[in-house]
Image (cartoon, rainbow, N blue to C red; front, side):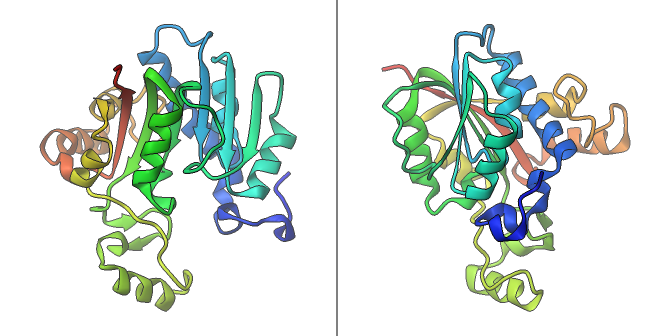
Length: 252
C-alpha cells in the first residue's frame, strides 16, 4: 500500500514512481544481475543499500546475500519497506547515508544507485562508503551524467547543465519547485569523485548485453536504440547519460 499523503515526509512524496512495483523491480534486476556477474559467491556477504527508498532493490538483493540492510532519510518510504519486505535477513533504517552509525568495515557490498546527486555533499558520501566497506569490498555505483538533454528528476531539458541560479529560476518558472536541489557531475567530475576506489566499468557491457543485465526495458537487442547507445558508449562516453561502475575498495 502506498502511504497516504499525510505520511509522506521525503523524496517519495513528490516522486510516486518510488512505489511503482514494476518499475522498481526492473531496476532491482539490473543491480542484482551486475553484482551476481561480478561476485562469484554472495551467500556469505553482507550488503547495504544507501538510499533504499521503498526497499524494492534491497529486498531483491536479500534473496542472494547473507544479509541486506537499507537506509534512507525518507521516513514514509522506509516505513513502507518495513511493512512490505522486512524479514530475517532484511532490515531497514531511517537515516542519513552520509552519517551512518555502522561500524567501520562492516559491509562486503554497498549499493548506491542514483543517490550521489541527492545528498548534501557527494564527497562525504564517498568517504562514508569507503569507511563502512570492507577492504576489497564492492560498491555498485549508478550515476547520472550532468551533460544530459533531459534532467531525469524534474524532466526538464538542459536543467542540469545550467548554472545554479538559472536552474533555480527554471524550476520555479515551470512549477517544479522553489529550488533545483540535485547536483549532477560530469563524467570527469565523477571520475574525480571516486578516485579513492578502483573502478570496474560495466556500462559498455550492459549496452552490448542488455538481456544479460536486465536492460531490455530500455535497450531491445538489435534495435536502432541499442546500436546508437553502443556507438555513444564507445565514441561519446563523456556524453553517455548513465554510468554503472563497480567501485572496489583498495586493500591496504
